[in-house]
Amino acid sequence: MSIIFYGALVSPTSLTSYLALPHAVISVTRKTGTIEWIEEDVPASQLQDILAMHGHPNITKLHGWIQFIQLKTGEFLMPGFIDTHTVSELC
Image (tube, rainbow, N blue to C red; front, side, top):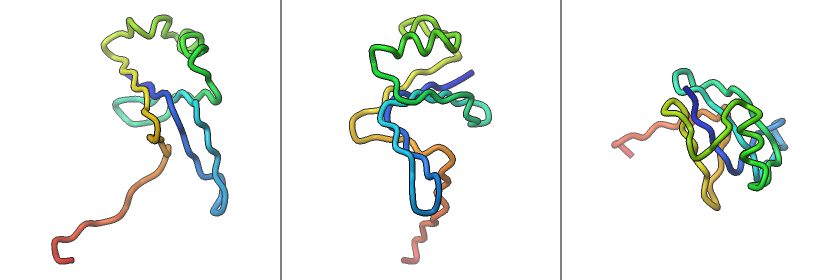
């Protein structure tokens, strides 16, 4: 059971730099949120081939346990990012 995302991915590599991947494919388990695999620099024309390589031969007929999400322009993922801020009604 996986969720497969296609779009921009931003990943810090140190405290002062990051890796920006505008056309990445990332598969995440639904149960634990663990990253199963990542493919970098995948043009839309090769998306079907990459999915087939990982055992998903037809994006239009993904089985019920697989969800495919294509990110929109301006959206991006930050794998491993944990938002730890708190919101208080006292502010």
